[in-house]
Length: 604
Image 1 (tube, rainbow, N blue to C red):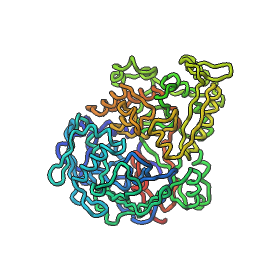
Image 2: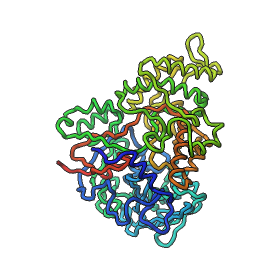
Image 3: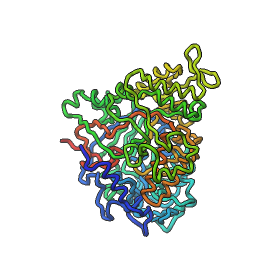
Image 4: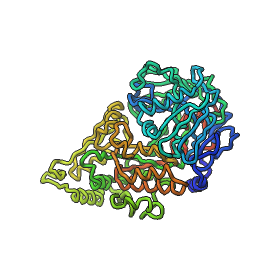
């Protein structure tokens, strides 16, 4: 199914949003980061939802891994990631057909000033939790304060910019910020709302399977077995089924999340009909594995969903907290030794393109060659401290596709020699201190594609005299070790949107570079990055915003923190034929919970 329009059209839409900021003069039904919401005040439903979709049926998804908690807001334990979105509602809901626009959900209106110094929400008087109790101002304030102080690290950074939160009348909540930040009004609108009373006398930080949440969303947890499955059932009494933002969404009666020990077991379960949908990340597998009987008979449909969002970064991240990877020349040597063209052809049939920067595939990505215009102006104060390539341009190496990659190996050897590394008479690479250069690559159990890539890469590095071990651990160990930054190199994936903002501090901000549990796995602490994030959040117009993101993209990419692999301009979803989605696809494509949010079940 193809979507009308192109990335060029999207760029025009974004840049045409105008010079105005997120400020709105009076309480409004919605709010956009720049300009006005695309949908009118009397919109009937999201453009990518089907208001006539029938209710009923079930969808069964598969996940590799396990879980030991039903609290996705705590920093303790493993939780099915979907619970954040299927079990909890926020004051406003995000439209994925616009770069960053929110519409009323638990709140019926939002108000803020142009500078972004405060935001005020008015609750919808009909808003209810799944137990029928009303969503109150007290619930909202408790949720914000709890998540912002003892919740998951994803919530902590934004809370540091909250000066006060207070009730306004019977249904209003006003949040005042420490410093002006136009994005904060939108971020606060997306915080999940929990029922405060459920947590009276309960240890929120250490809760696991002992608390089944009272939800604020269309689904309730009706059944679960630790590490095996979670079943969510549609609440027939959900209060908001007919508000515009929710029409045509969450119509499937049962969403079941099944967990498997590895990807092979999950695929076999799908082929046998035990799960009803599966996302395929390997282009090679998509072309070769989906010829089983259920596909041939038409019971299974293969759908390709295009998107217009940035590539993000997927690959292998180097921990700069470790001495070896603190030297950019060593990191560049690791990149030069990575034979992308050969690995891509071997593992992925060379189908998907390589990631060329964190925001590649979008107008937010850095442009080729030297920095110019506002990008150069923004980076100039930091130029003396930036790594080679930030100002004059940086490209990841291209190989001739042969297995030996002599040119890449030679460049890697030259860089290591420049960094003080030597080869001893046994052919071992020695550090400047004279010790053998060795490191481990940490992998998560079930990551077969990453393992195939690593096996080739390890062989290549052995030619440089580098001893590389591969440490494969289960989900719990993997999270514990990455949360504690206890790794040398590991597989890495971060998705990025068309509206980057405060979350960038969580990914690579200096303040969280040593905060355990943050997503700054590379340990980057770069003043230029922090400054570009500040500019993004205070840009007076969209042109400056784009320049700030492009400048940050240059610093990140030339920082050589990640060895990138490939990305896909489409999502590949195999699903039972009775699962359907609307013809109109959002610009974000198959993004957060697009499935199952707007899907429905209907026999042909």
